[in-house]
Amino acid sequence: MTALASVIDVYKFFGPTGEESPVLRGVSFDVHEGEFVCVMGPSGSGKTTLLHLISGLDQPSTGHVELAGQSLAGLNQHQRTLLRRDAVGYVFQFFNLMPNLNVTENVGLPLAIQGEKPSQQREKVVGLLEKLGLGKRLKAEPHQLSGGEMQRVSIARALAGGQPLLLCDEPTGNLSQKHGVEVMNTLRKVCDEDNRAVLLVTHNPRDAAYADRVLFLVDGQLAEDSTLTGPNIPVEDVHKTLAALQI
Ligand SMILES: Nc1ncnc2c1ncn2[C@@H]1O[C@H](COP(=O)(O)OP(=O)(O)OP(=O)(O)O)[C@@H](O)[C@H]1O
Ligand SMILES: [Mg+2]
Picture 1 (spheres, helix red, strand yellow):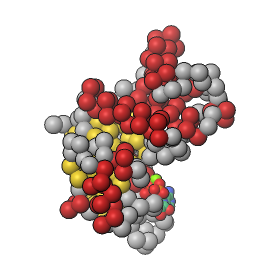
Picture 2 (cartoon, helix red, strand yellow):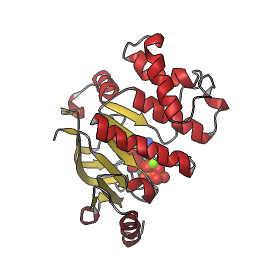
Picture 3 (tube, rainbow, N blue to C red):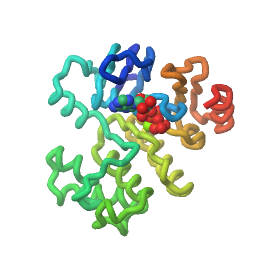
């Protein structure tokens, strides 16, 4: 199995002096092709920070991140941007939609960046939006959408780009049960049918149960003895592990 992302003994400190205790302390793991990996942990435990490091949006204080076989530390900012564009689809915790583009244009953005004309994109973009229950919101602008709708647009945009690794930061946090389950089924399918990989951050045990592996981040470290492995992780096992780790 090819590692799409490798996190190798990563520490992350914030602040100018680096004197504050690290948000991440010696975190190491891989995400392979076709794999669905979930990270759970308390609020503030460094989950979003970890996704930022893997996508090259931020850099570790020490340790290394490799993306698509390339060490991010060896690349300049422009090279990192290009690699991120090609290797990663990102569902941001707070959506990051372009406010001046409508729903269809937002979802088509990664395809436009890859050089596809709007007429070429349309079928794929509309298909994704319909699948996510947004067929009636194609021309809406972000400010006209509910939180759950914005979240689904952000998921459609990450899926549209076709990158081999999807980083999903609490993608069901604003969704109803019904839409949440649809999104999770879509993400599982992306792994099983397209051999893409998903790295999912969630607080929701129901979502974690879709994963092949669930990692628990506590006090900046992975609780390795508590890792759950699938397929078909019972949701009760996720609840039990969260309780045992006091998450
Ligand atoms: N750019 C930054 N500058 C300073 N501190 C930061 C920065 N980004 C994150 N932090 C701090 O790092 C810690 C981890 O933040 P992070 O957003 O990664 O947590 P999280 O696990 O994603 O939390 P949540 O579940 O609430 O989304 C927090 O204490 C946060 O304040
Ligand atoms: Mg977060």
